[in-house]
Image (tube, rainbow, N blue to C red; front, side):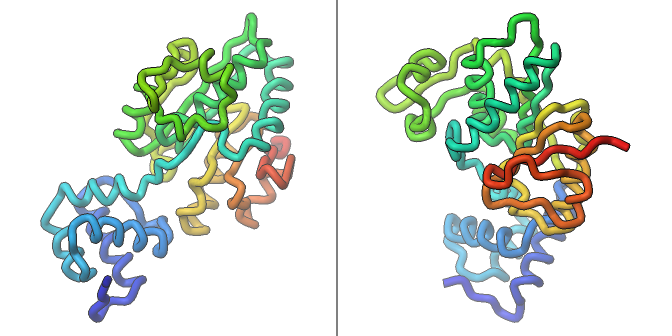
Length: 272
């Protein structure tokens, strides 16, 4: 269905990356070629284009399609308390930090539509040990629409399947048979903002950073740059939580030690 005339996969990816960089401020040169091509195919299918050369021409002269493709590159499929076994480990870490600090800063990087930072907020509420404490959850993404949806806080039941019934009624308002809206008590805990992990400087003085299922879409070189930024972002002995299919690049292992290998949780080594 998808024909490649005289252009190999690498050349197609290079050409598309170049077009996007020239016509917008968005630099996707660090995205893996195979991931980019998969997302391009999805756009081609939506447009009824079955030739990569024709799609490249269409992209060059249709600015709206450039932004459609950029949005396609932002993977916004998530759910509350994804990979449930990890959250018990996370709960213990957060409780330990709350017990010894008065201000706790948590960063959900690549937060998509808010499922992860709101999961963190629920976990903290359920700990019930934050009297006299200030907990700030920063939630960032590059996708404007995802951030708008996150701030609205309306979710289909399929995203909430991991939440026990008693917590669902406690933290959500039922809109209809399939939609729930998160209550203001949780909304107030999360600060959403646009942030590009590649271009923008890191947030600082973080106790924990969650960046799950984001690094897998970047080249090894770009992964190393982002991990270096997370290192600068975290306080000494702060925690980094990656996705279960993600690993620290070998060159970054000088910066972090393994806290829990099964859950992909790492701890920043002590500053010199």
